[in-house]
Length: 376
Image (cartoon, rainbow, N blue to C red; front, side, top):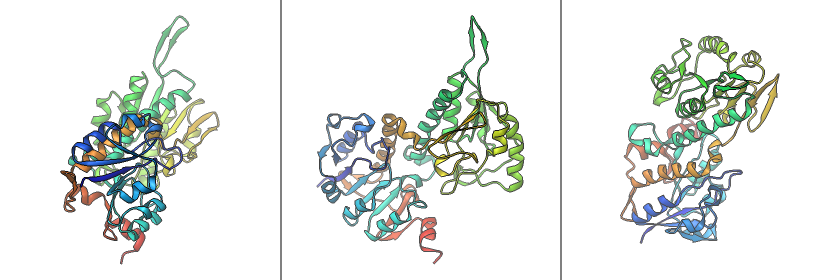
């Protein structure tokens, strides 16, 4: 009997992505899997029912859940969906356990094995499964387009009969995947780009894209490729240097994040006060509190002739390619576990072990277990 994989409509408000695109469905079928696709699941991402030729379309999501051996999601499922899954079945999705503790308890109580996509370890072998990176690529690209549409200036230099217009100056804060994509996109649009990251190792990548690295003298290289939190003295040193560069910027793209924690506050109100009239800040960290003190999640606000934009779920604004990329991440993860139509999970595999959140009624991710159950 082939393994059954369910893909349902996303239920989180304004989510337009879908967990699998048609090309990945056909590849999973060749691996011996049967795909149960809720009718219309791909519509928001512009994948029609007909394009999923190798999937079995189902009208009743509840029936698909009861049959499914594996449920694939983009956003966390509801507790009601978890309750309908078979005991021992596998859920692969973004979960964000620190924000959804009740959901983790439901997974534990219903004996669901869960692999959280945001926990995929950042090791070379797992790069093709890293959904945070794939979706950050979309976010970095879209953020620059948002800034370009909000700033009251052209991005490129233009030579016209009315005179020469100088290019806009863009500052990108954070040179992770989103930041690097933002740098590349801003450069393609003709802007002059500076970038800042507290990891000195980012300099080579920043400069390879044609941007200038801002050196504040602060080094906060952290574990796993992430930045650590700064000390108060380091924050002040960083702020003093950044303020000088922000004062000259036409647009700022801020992307700094600390996994599982509120976003670091990098842009103070005083720094915004010092920016030029018409300057724009696009704060990609809005969902976790924002890198700017003035950011309001999901809103575009005007503050003393500056524009602060706090977009949410940016990857969903390019749902076609975002879904394609996420589906490839899932396919590469599932390839580790499906053999000839059967689910064979190696729980000693470093990738599986890294993203395993719950299994056999236990919370298997140590930081989450500590958060929910305490040290004991």
